[in-house]
Structures are given as C-alpha cells and as structure tokens.
Length: 162
Image 1 (cartoon, rainbow, N blue to C red):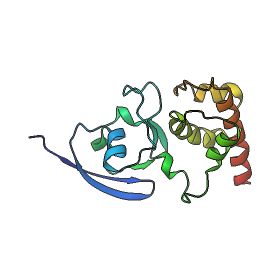
Image 2 (image 1 turned 30 degrees about the horizontal axis):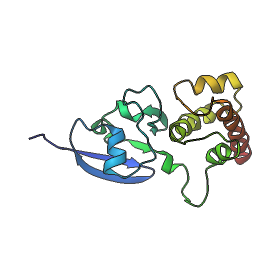
Image 3 (image 1 turned 90 degrees about the horizontal axis):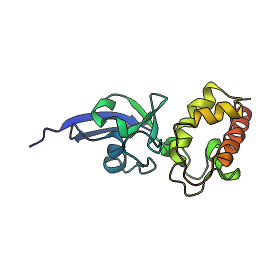
Image 4 (image 1 turned 120 degrees about the vertical axis):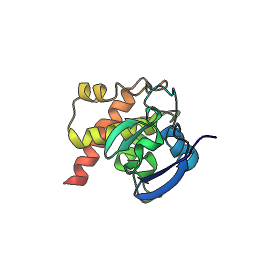
C-alpha cells in the first residue's frame, strides 16, 4: 500500500488540502484533484510548455514537479488570471483580438509564461518576445499572431498601470 501525504497549497487565492500519493505530478493534482483543467499536459517531459503555471509568481512546468513539492506554496493557473469569470484578463483579451490562439491547447501555458515576462519587461521587442516564447510549442499558429498578441497585451497592461 502506498503511503499518502498531505499537501496544502494556495491555488488562485484559495487554500486547498489533499491527501495524495507522493509520486502524483503537480499537473495531475491540479487537473484531477482540484478540477482546474486549464493546465494542459502535452508531453509530460517539460518540453511543450502547455502545463506552465506560476509558482510563487514564477513560471514552472507543472508536469516536472510533484504535488508534494508544492506543499505550502502559492500557485496560479490560467483560471486565476481574473477574478470575474465574465471578464477577460488584458492578456486574454489581447490574444482574442490578435488571433493569438487557434486550437487553444498551448494557450494557457503561453499566457502563464508571458504574464511574468511582461511584468519584468513591459515594452519588449519582437526578438525578446520570441525568446520568452521559445519554451512553449504551438503547432497551429506559426507564432506571428502570438507575438502580435503579446505586443498588444503589453500595450493593454501598460495602459492599465498608468
């Protein structure tokens, strides 16, 4: 019999406690234990970036971390971008308007990668955006619309902080 371990985390501002198997991946914990399915699993090797979430404000690949390693930490998933389910976060709005998504599978991971990037670099160049996106694979768009969406999001977030 596998011993279960208690995990206490704050996800999107809400506290959770669960008993989990020590080998449970954080991505599976979010999806199956907390029903937060916006975090996608594309490769389970940390290569595609679809499972990117924020851990204490920094982007991480949730498929490369065990749920027990997140004990006591604060996580943000794509569901936590906005408190109002009727409103889009400026980053989501920019992706919508600039056609920065197609099938949407990679989008949550890209959003969670780009949000802290734009906080650190509010007026990025196209090359800086492409470098920031280099760990996120998109099989549909060819990236130009994603880059355009990030530029638009930078404008929106700049206006919001003014």
